Length: 421
Ligand SMILES: *Cc1c(COP(=O)(O)O)cnc(C)c1O
Image 1 (cartoon, rainbow, N blue to C red):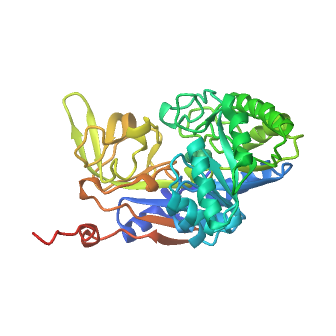
Image 2: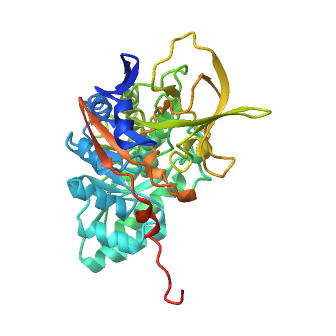
């Protein structure tokens, strides 16, 4: 469910016409709907109501201050994977007591900053990292509350680049090594191993991998408690998928996901942490772009638009499908043609869609690339010296630019000449 709908033949974000935003901001731009963000968060939260829990939104999915603040006002904590993300969360007013720090390569400087900020928990991904955190925490005279990330070696049945819970992935500690590393952790200075963590991948649309992983987690928590560890927190990660294609079967409702948790872990007196990213922001954002040219190639037709892979890399990086619709509504019987939707970047991999059936479009028409709110703007870059795409947030009848388009001067002034030139 989202709040991007046609009104009087023009696509709106809530009550604001996207044509109006395009006239004011220029194209391309990302547009987020506050009502959709709030709705997704609330539906997820309500589905978990029978479990003692904290939602730590994975802010790598979309880390704009306005998005973080919208969610933190609803009570969300944050899952961060770098010091930069931690500063973003703190700047938006998130309590450090609601921040979890994940990631396989935390530096000692990052650990120091997070300990000084008194965050809730570190998710530990390797034994050397555990020792490093112990050293840093002891030197500061602090205790790091940790969960150890377990890699259960389950197949999340998602794209290879977003699968994280298989043995060959870089994430977490092997299931068989878990008891050993908890024994080590319990003896280390400055470490309180109060939790356990698992995140098996992203865009998961089948609940069985979750179920298998949670069953394994149950066995492990019981074994760790037998070993004398006081495991009070289970961080179950994120990963629940969203619908990208209109035709596909909807991914499971969060209530079904919650039911699996109740069935597998519900009796263990745990506080649960959840780290949804895509589920919250994915369908709450779109990328609006303008048609530049229609090019008839000898083998294919190309719709050349002003947004490119540097603005939205998901199609080329993950072979992701994004629905593309015209901002001006077209009649159902408008003739369609099959095209590649491509950007101006000098790369063959620069496309937003391949072999897509779209109604006739002409230069200056606007298109909307849907479900672009997660892993969109955050992965944007300036390749080909293109300016970072601006971001806009809508709330009811109002909209605000939440990240302006930089100028070419801003872009070029990031470079510095050495004195000899
Ligand atoms: C990326 C990530 C998430 C969020 O994943 P989604 O699929 O967006 O829900 C949660 N936890 C960790 C550790 C992650 O790396």
